[in-house]
Image 1: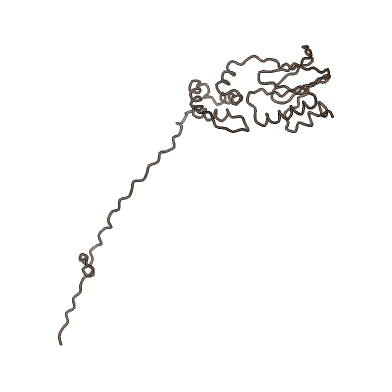
Image 2: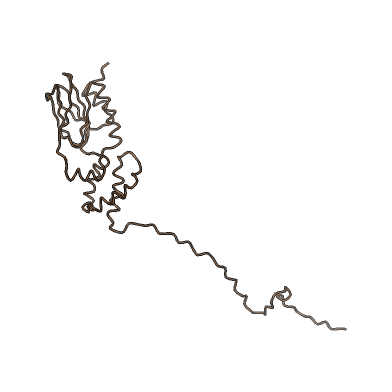
Length: 227
């Protein structure tokens, strides 16, 4: 009987590749290059203690009338930064809060002038014609009010006028209202704070406060709308 010689062919050679000896570690996987991560710029924050940046943001907000919205004028932030840089006294937050009381009506720079050199107070003079005169005064001791105040004051003025009252407005520069008839003073009353003041012939002035439900107090003082 003829003997058969068995020949073992390595698997790698049979597949047409290089011969891999038993126990030889596999070659490392080829290195695949990846793109470097894109670096994003970190948010720019105001340096610690940069009170001017804080003041500018506050001013941009307080120059908008409460109850309304809107974008600042182009270049407004730069103008405010210049103003605060030139006025380091406003590093004091309490002093800045004083600006907020008038800025939505005057602007920040004009408010500074108003507070630094306040104009003298003057009376609000109202002329009436009727012997049984009636007067309705809305008044505020700041130049900055609100959208609600404007809306309800307009409505209250109409309600008072419908009852025969002369209407007028006292601003922050008025400290008293003087009612005149034919050039002669017939009544006067102080204007303090913010609210509505009612006056009429033969009666004491009455502070009606500020109340969106204005029909009842106005009717109580002036009476109902004439038929």
